[in-house]
Length: 166
Image 1 (cartoon, one colour):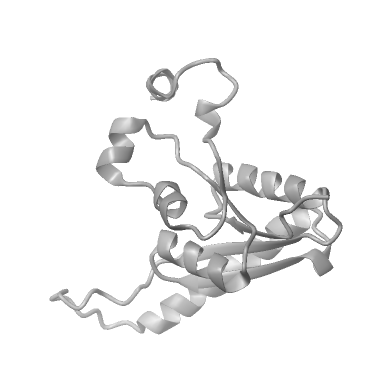
Image 2: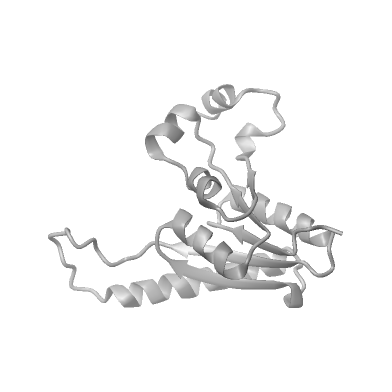
């Protein structure tokens, strides 16, 4: 029996996120009591306080539209993964992805967080930062990071895979 009873699968609807969901489902399949929490983080559409442009649109309506769309996509992912409705839940939160993933894992008392990485090399990661990297540093539980497809199964280093992908 697995010790991972509550599995938070953070998805951004990319190919790597789909692979991360597959990994989360595989972890859950070894324990009949395990639950998978599908989580998506949408950016906050409200401009930063230092912004000098205030759009003439209803930003909360945009947020609501993004949330509703993400919830529909999460439900479709769960259905495609054949998840038992009794063993999964979906959540959409607004904010900075790494912080919200960690916060959700804390609230759910997660045993593990599963998420995908991007396909960037070390230099790109250093310049741009990485949600996965921040989650690993801040998480209250183990984190399973599923590598981008360009980095798996080729026998190449990350730098070689990056060069080939360009």
